[in-house]
Length: 234
Image (cartoon, rainbow, N blue to C red; front, side, top):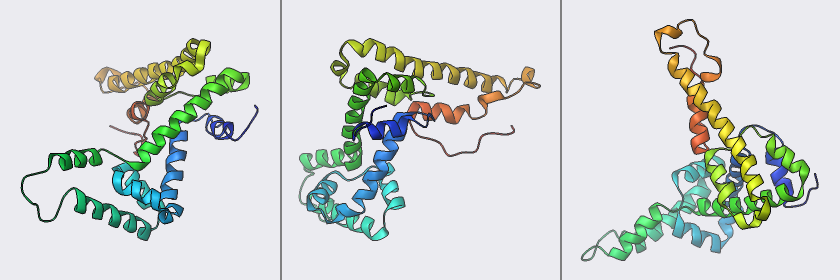
């Protein structure tokens, strides 16, 4: 496959053929952004202004604490908490609650600097995937060889920039549906088999690939792994 600065990260996440490639893309972007926020971005005032205004969700706060130095996280929290105290939740309230401030607080609670960045970057990556799928037969083959596309990223791949796919949309939709729908069927079968194993009539049956079907189903539905050990005995 031809490679350039845009296609290299796409090839990097599709070549392993392990799980959902778009989840790997998201994980890579998240890690890079979390490292950046707690690293070199500390000295960039324009970034600190945005992080103070938008904050972070639990997932990305946890990632920043894991990847960044404690002082970096403390400094980010210091200025973020200060802004909330000064503008949204004063220590000593004056008069009735301010509806605009309450609305701004609600928006902040559901906002995240990294989530916004990942959403924009993932949409850009989808456009590159579309372009490569249209122009490179080798990539179309690699795409078709993926184990599956998770539910969230199936929606993303199909709904972002449909017009950009042009006449290729129907073929791309069919290829993506085979990956998502085929895996969905295997999950349904495994979950059903898992449930049947609790029936006394299945006493001598084999668990097969159903042991971790709960974890795999949740990963498919949400895009996130559950770190548990597969069930051995019941």
